[in-house]
Length: 323
Image 1 (cartoon, rainbow, N blue to C red):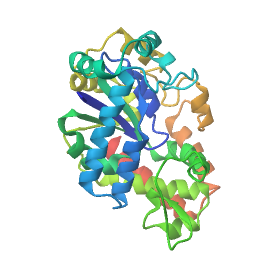
Image 2: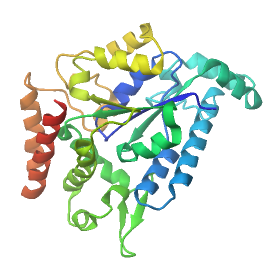
Image 3: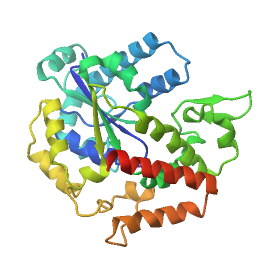
Image 4: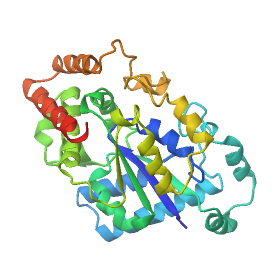
Protein backbone atom coordinates (compact mmCIF):
# COMPACT_ATOMS: atom_id res chain seq x y z
CA UNK A 1 0.00 0.00 0.00
CA UNK A 2 2.89 2.37 0.69
CA UNK A 3 3.32 5.13 -1.89
CA UNK A 4 6.21 7.02 -0.31
CA UNK A 5 7.78 7.42 3.13
CA UNK A 6 9.88 10.23 4.54
CA UNK A 7 11.98 9.31 7.55
CA UNK A 8 13.31 12.22 9.60
CA UNK A 9 16.15 10.68 11.55
CA UNK A 10 18.99 11.76 13.77
CA UNK A 11 20.75 11.47 17.09
CA UNK A 12 18.75 12.57 20.16
CA UNK A 13 18.87 16.34 20.58
CA UNK A 14 19.56 17.13 16.91
CA UNK A 15 16.23 18.90 16.27
CA UNK A 16 14.16 16.16 14.62
CA UNK A 17 10.86 17.29 16.13
CA UNK A 18 11.46 20.83 14.82
CA UNK A 19 12.01 19.56 11.29
CA UNK A 20 9.22 16.98 11.47
CA UNK A 21 6.58 19.58 12.26
CA UNK A 22 7.64 21.47 9.11
CA UNK A 23 7.67 18.30 7.00
CA UNK A 24 4.14 17.46 8.22
CA UNK A 25 2.90 20.77 6.84
CA UNK A 26 3.55 19.74 3.21
CA UNK A 27 0.54 18.52 1.24
CA UNK A 28 -0.09 14.75 1.39
CA UNK A 29 2.46 14.28 4.19
CA UNK A 30 0.86 12.52 7.13
CA UNK A 31 1.29 13.42 10.79
CA UNK A 32 4.64 12.31 12.19
CA UNK A 33 4.69 8.91 13.85
CA UNK A 34 7.25 7.04 15.89
CA UNK A 35 8.15 3.64 14.46
CA UNK A 36 9.41 1.42 17.28
CA UNK A 37 9.13 -1.85 15.33
CA UNK A 38 11.16 -0.50 12.41
CA UNK A 39 13.77 0.88 14.82
CA UNK A 40 13.94 -2.45 16.63
CA UNK A 41 14.42 -4.40 13.39
CA UNK A 42 17.28 -2.08 12.41
CA UNK A 43 18.88 -2.46 15.84
CA UNK A 44 18.54 -6.27 15.74
CA UNK A 45 20.14 -6.24 12.30
CA UNK A 46 23.03 -4.14 13.63
CA UNK A 47 23.57 -6.73 16.36
CA UNK A 48 23.41 -9.48 13.69
CA UNK A 49 20.46 -11.10 15.47
CA UNK A 50 18.10 -11.23 12.47
CA UNK A 51 18.60 -12.17 8.82
CA UNK A 52 18.50 -9.30 6.32
CA UNK A 53 15.55 -10.72 4.38
CA UNK A 54 13.52 -11.00 7.59
CA UNK A 55 14.40 -7.43 8.60
CA UNK A 56 13.52 -6.08 5.14
CA UNK A 57 10.17 -7.90 5.10
CA UNK A 58 9.28 -6.69 8.60
CA UNK A 59 10.16 -3.09 7.67
CA UNK A 60 7.97 -3.24 4.54
CA UNK A 61 5.06 -4.87 6.36
CA UNK A 62 5.21 -2.39 9.24
CA UNK A 63 5.38 0.59 6.87
CA UNK A 64 2.23 -0.70 5.13
CA UNK A 65 0.52 -1.16 8.50
CA UNK A 66 1.43 2.36 9.64
CA UNK A 67 0.03 4.04 6.53
CA UNK A 68 -3.07 1.81 6.66
CA UNK A 69 -3.78 2.69 10.30
CA UNK A 70 -3.17 6.42 9.99
CA UNK A 71 -5.46 6.64 6.95
CA UNK A 72 -8.42 5.40 8.96
CA UNK A 73 -7.57 7.20 12.21
CA UNK A 74 -6.59 4.05 14.08
CA UNK A 75 -4.03 4.45 16.90
CA UNK A 76 -4.22 8.25 16.50
CA UNK A 77 -2.53 10.20 19.29
CA UNK A 78 -5.08 12.51 20.93
CA UNK A 79 -2.85 13.64 23.79
CA UNK A 80 -2.92 17.40 23.26
CA UNK A 81 0.54 18.17 24.67
CA UNK A 82 2.39 15.67 22.44
CA UNK A 83 4.12 16.89 19.29
CA UNK A 84 2.70 13.85 17.47
CA UNK A 85 -0.87 14.69 18.54
CA UNK A 86 -3.57 15.06 15.90
CA UNK A 87 -4.35 18.40 17.54
CA UNK A 88 -1.04 19.67 16.18
CA UNK A 89 -1.82 18.51 12.65
CA UNK A 90 -5.23 19.05 11.03
CA UNK A 91 -7.37 17.52 13.83
CA UNK A 92 -10.63 17.75 11.85
CA UNK A 93 -9.22 15.44 9.18
CA UNK A 94 -8.14 12.77 11.66
CA UNK A 95 -11.42 12.98 13.60
CA UNK A 96 -13.27 12.57 10.29
CA UNK A 97 -11.24 9.45 9.50
CA UNK A 98 -12.15 7.93 12.87
CA UNK A 99 -15.87 8.32 12.16
CA UNK A 100 -15.91 6.95 8.60
CA UNK A 101 -15.78 3.35 7.32
CA UNK A 102 -12.28 1.88 7.25
CA UNK A 103 -10.83 -1.56 6.68
CA UNK A 104 -11.55 -2.71 3.10
CA UNK A 105 -12.10 0.84 1.80
CA UNK A 106 -8.64 2.05 2.88
CA UNK A 107 -6.37 0.51 0.17
CA UNK A 108 -8.31 2.23 -2.62
CA UNK A 109 -8.26 5.54 -0.71
CA UNK A 110 -4.49 5.22 -0.33
CA UNK A 111 -4.10 4.37 -4.02
CA UNK A 112 -6.12 7.44 -5.01
CA UNK A 113 -4.74 10.06 -2.59
CA UNK A 114 -1.12 8.79 -2.44
CA UNK A 115 -0.41 9.90 1.14
CA UNK A 116 3.20 10.12 2.31
CA UNK A 117 4.03 8.19 5.46
CA UNK A 118 6.05 10.34 7.86
CA UNK A 119 8.26 8.70 10.48
CA UNK A 120 10.48 10.32 13.10
CA UNK A 121 13.24 7.92 14.14
CA UNK A 122 16.35 7.75 16.27
CA UNK A 123 19.91 6.69 15.42
CA UNK A 124 19.07 4.76 12.23
CA UNK A 125 21.84 6.11 9.98
CA UNK A 126 23.86 2.85 10.36
CA UNK A 127 20.78 1.02 8.98
CA UNK A 128 20.33 3.26 5.92
CA UNK A 129 21.35 0.55 3.43
CA UNK A 130 18.93 -1.91 5.03
CA UNK A 131 16.09 0.64 4.88
CA UNK A 132 16.93 1.45 1.26
CA UNK A 133 16.86 -2.24 0.30
CA UNK A 134 13.51 -2.67 2.05
CA UNK A 135 11.75 0.45 0.75
CA UNK A 136 13.76 1.20 -2.43
CA UNK A 137 12.73 4.37 -4.31
CA UNK A 138 9.78 4.93 -1.96
CA UNK A 139 12.22 6.08 0.74
CA UNK A 140 13.28 9.66 1.50
CA UNK A 141 15.74 9.49 4.39
CA UNK A 142 16.49 12.87 6.00
CA UNK A 143 19.42 12.83 8.41
CA UNK A 144 19.44 15.94 10.60
CA UNK A 145 22.93 16.46 11.99
CA UNK A 146 24.01 18.85 14.74
CA UNK A 147 27.15 19.83 16.60
CA UNK A 148 27.76 16.99 19.11
CA UNK A 149 28.03 19.38 22.05
CA UNK A 150 24.38 20.32 21.52
CA UNK A 151 23.30 16.66 21.70
CA UNK A 152 25.10 15.58 24.87
CA UNK A 153 22.75 17.26 27.37
CA UNK A 154 19.67 15.40 26.11
CA UNK A 155 21.53 12.13 25.63
CA UNK A 156 22.83 12.23 29.21
CA UNK A 157 19.23 12.57 30.41
CA UNK A 158 18.18 9.70 28.13
CA UNK A 159 20.22 7.14 30.04
CA UNK A 160 17.68 7.08 32.87
CA UNK A 161 15.09 6.16 30.21
CA UNK A 162 17.35 3.57 28.55
CA UNK A 163 17.68 1.77 31.90
CA UNK A 164 13.98 2.02 32.78
CA UNK A 165 10.72 0.29 31.83
CA UNK A 166 9.77 2.80 29.10
CA UNK A 167 12.78 1.94 26.94
CA UNK A 168 11.87 0.48 23.53
CA UNK A 169 15.39 0.21 22.09
CA UNK A 170 17.01 -3.21 21.82
CA UNK A 171 19.24 -4.25 24.71
CA UNK A 172 21.50 -7.27 25.05
CA UNK A 173 23.29 -9.14 27.80
CA UNK A 174 27.06 -9.57 27.88
CA UNK A 175 28.74 -12.49 29.68
CA UNK A 176 25.26 -13.43 30.96
CA UNK A 177 25.39 -10.51 33.40
CA UNK A 178 24.75 -6.84 32.69
CA UNK A 179 22.32 -5.44 30.13
CA UNK A 180 23.58 -2.98 27.51
CA UNK A 181 22.00 -0.74 24.90
CA UNK A 182 22.47 -1.82 21.29
CA UNK A 183 24.95 1.00 20.61
CA UNK A 184 27.22 -0.30 23.39
CA UNK A 185 28.05 -3.45 21.45
CA UNK A 186 31.80 -4.12 21.47
CA UNK A 187 32.43 -1.31 23.97
CA UNK A 188 30.84 -2.85 27.06
CA UNK A 189 33.90 -2.24 29.24
CA UNK A 190 33.84 1.51 28.51
CA UNK A 191 30.18 1.77 29.50
CA UNK A 192 30.74 -0.30 32.65
CA UNK A 193 33.23 2.26 33.94
CA UNK A 194 31.49 5.46 32.80
CA UNK A 195 29.13 7.95 34.41
CA UNK A 196 26.04 9.16 32.52
CA UNK A 197 27.89 12.04 30.81
CA UNK A 198 30.69 9.74 29.67
CA UNK A 199 28.14 7.18 28.44
CA UNK A 200 26.54 9.96 26.42
CA UNK A 201 29.92 10.79 24.86
CA UNK A 202 30.63 7.14 24.01
CA UNK A 203 27.21 6.78 22.37
CA UNK A 204 27.77 9.99 20.40
CA UNK A 205 31.15 8.65 19.31
CA UNK A 206 29.52 5.41 18.12
CA UNK A 207 27.01 7.32 15.98
CA UNK A 208 29.05 10.27 14.77
CA UNK A 209 31.99 8.09 13.78
CA UNK A 210 29.69 6.40 11.26
CA UNK A 211 28.31 9.73 10.06
CA UNK A 212 31.69 11.38 9.70
CA UNK A 213 33.28 8.45 7.87
CA UNK A 214 30.43 8.07 5.36
CA UNK A 215 30.63 9.35 1.79
CA UNK A 216 26.86 10.05 1.91
CA UNK A 217 26.24 8.67 -1.59
CA UNK A 218 22.98 6.80 -0.92
CA UNK A 219 20.31 8.04 -3.35
CA UNK A 220 17.66 8.07 -0.60
CA UNK A 221 19.68 10.36 1.68
CA UNK A 222 19.32 14.08 2.39
CA UNK A 223 21.79 15.47 4.95
CA UNK A 224 20.65 18.65 6.73
CA UNK A 225 23.03 20.36 9.19
CA UNK A 226 20.86 21.95 11.89
CA UNK A 227 23.07 25.03 12.23
CA UNK A 228 22.73 25.89 8.54
CA UNK A 229 19.06 24.98 8.21
CA UNK A 230 17.78 27.22 11.03
CA UNK A 231 19.54 30.25 9.57
CA UNK A 232 19.30 29.57 5.82
CA UNK A 233 16.57 27.00 5.20
CA UNK A 234 15.55 27.82 1.62
CA UNK A 235 17.70 25.34 -0.33
CA UNK A 236 16.73 22.49 2.01
CA UNK A 237 13.02 23.36 1.83
CA UNK A 238 13.24 23.36 -1.99
CA UNK A 239 14.92 19.93 -1.93
CA UNK A 240 12.24 18.53 0.37
CA UNK A 241 9.53 20.01 -1.83
CA UNK A 242 11.06 18.40 -4.93
CA UNK A 243 11.54 14.95 -3.38
CA UNK A 244 8.08 14.96 -1.79
CA UNK A 245 6.45 16.21 -4.98
CA UNK A 246 4.65 18.82 -2.91
CA UNK A 247 4.73 22.60 -3.17
CA UNK A 248 5.78 24.94 -0.37
CA UNK A 249 2.32 26.00 0.73
CA UNK A 250 1.06 28.46 3.34
CA UNK A 251 1.02 25.74 6.01
CA UNK A 252 4.74 25.13 5.51
CA UNK A 253 5.47 28.85 5.75
CA UNK A 254 3.36 29.18 8.90
CA UNK A 255 5.05 26.21 10.59
CA UNK A 256 8.46 27.70 9.83
CA UNK A 257 7.33 30.88 11.55
CA UNK A 258 6.14 28.82 14.53
CA UNK A 259 9.59 27.24 14.73
CA UNK A 260 11.26 30.67 14.40
CA UNK A 261 12.96 29.78 11.12
CA UNK A 262 14.94 31.44 9.74
CA UNK A 263 16.48 32.68 12.95
CA UNK A 264 19.48 34.86 13.76
CA UNK A 265 20.87 32.64 16.52
CA UNK A 266 20.93 28.83 16.61
CA UNK A 267 19.41 28.50 20.10
CA UNK A 268 16.45 30.81 19.46
CA UNK A 269 13.90 28.00 19.25
CA UNK A 270 10.35 28.36 20.62
CA UNK A 271 10.40 27.73 24.40
CA UNK A 272 8.34 24.54 24.31
CA UNK A 273 8.07 22.47 27.48
CA UNK A 274 9.27 19.34 25.65
CA UNK A 275 12.49 21.15 24.67
CA UNK A 276 13.02 22.38 28.24
CA UNK A 277 12.48 18.87 29.58
CA UNK A 278 15.39 17.63 27.50
CA UNK A 279 17.80 20.35 28.52
CA UNK A 280 17.09 23.34 26.25
CA UNK A 281 17.91 26.71 27.79
CA UNK A 282 17.61 30.16 26.22
CA UNK A 283 20.87 31.66 25.04
CA UNK A 284 22.64 34.15 27.28
CA UNK A 285 25.06 35.46 24.68
CA UNK A 286 25.06 36.79 21.11
CA UNK A 287 28.12 34.68 20.41
CA UNK A 288 27.56 31.16 19.04
CA UNK A 289 31.09 30.22 20.13
CA UNK A 290 30.43 31.35 23.71
CA UNK A 291 27.23 29.29 23.83
CA UNK A 292 29.16 26.19 22.76
CA UNK A 293 31.96 26.91 25.22
CA UNK A 294 29.49 27.09 28.12
CA UNK A 295 28.23 23.61 27.26
CA UNK A 296 31.80 22.33 26.97
CA UNK A 297 32.68 23.76 30.42
CA UNK A 298 29.73 21.93 31.97
CA UNK A 299 30.79 18.69 30.28
CA UNK A 300 34.43 19.12 31.28
CA UNK A 301 33.50 19.25 34.96
CA UNK A 302 31.67 15.91 34.73
CA UNK A 303 33.90 13.68 32.58
CA UNK A 304 37.44 12.32 32.42
CA UNK A 305 40.15 13.99 30.37
CA UNK A 306 40.02 11.09 27.92
CA UNK A 307 36.27 11.45 27.37
CA UNK A 308 36.59 15.23 26.96
CA UNK A 309 39.37 14.75 24.40
CA UNK A 310 37.12 12.37 22.47
CA UNK A 311 34.31 14.93 22.52
CA UNK A 312 36.64 17.67 21.28
CA UNK A 313 37.82 15.43 18.44
CA UNK A 314 34.23 14.73 17.35
CA UNK A 315 33.37 18.43 17.55
CA UNK A 316 36.30 19.42 15.35
CA UNK A 317 35.53 16.74 12.78
CA UNK A 318 31.87 17.76 12.71
CA UNK A 319 32.71 21.41 12.06
CA UNK A 320 35.20 20.43 9.34
CA UNK A 321 32.71 18.16 7.51
CA UNK A 322 29.43 20.03 7.84
CA UNK A 323 30.09 23.65 8.76
